[in-house]
Length: 272
Image (cartoon, rainbow, N blue to C red; front, top):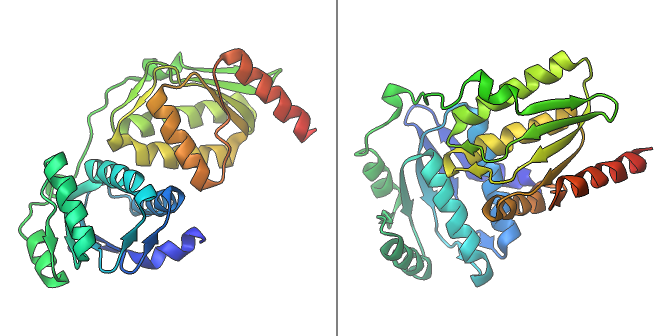
């Protein structure tokens, strides 16, 4: 299923600040289907330029195979933590309602399940909007924190990015860092580079993942001859591999810098 098939199921109402996701009669048959759908939701949120939305979710007739439940819960939780001002679900089947209720009891959140769209909208209408203050994240880093983490090897055509032991807390951190990377590339005198990325101990918080995925994707399309990552933490590696499986790119993750450099040489030969 091409990602464009998901687009009619993702709608935004700017006036009421609601993102409506239509899962009705949709079958999540496996984890890749879950990740592709949620990747598209994240892309559409990024395109709006707004980080915070009320979520209105239509679950009527939705089916989730057991193999997909873990990723469905994980991606939904991360999306809510990063971008939801409040989430309401409606028209859930008895099976789905029972599963979400059990999850809510375990995770200690209010599932906000209703039998119809009108009641769900009424519930959203009682929730306060955080956009009245327009979310502006305070910067956690200064320019000096980024400068030392970018280096260029002009002979080998490699740009090295050091994300080691760096934490992206939210989108401001991502955008500040990637703005600096783009500036450095513009000043480098070359438009295309192999990217060598050190992820040792890098932490990407849920509130930063949408921006991190979006900025990384656009940077690669515009300026990368090929990207190789090395020494990521287990959670970061797992998330990158999941996203690679649904976004049509090779994660190219290696254990050491030497192995990553060897992979870049393989890519260089393949291009030749």
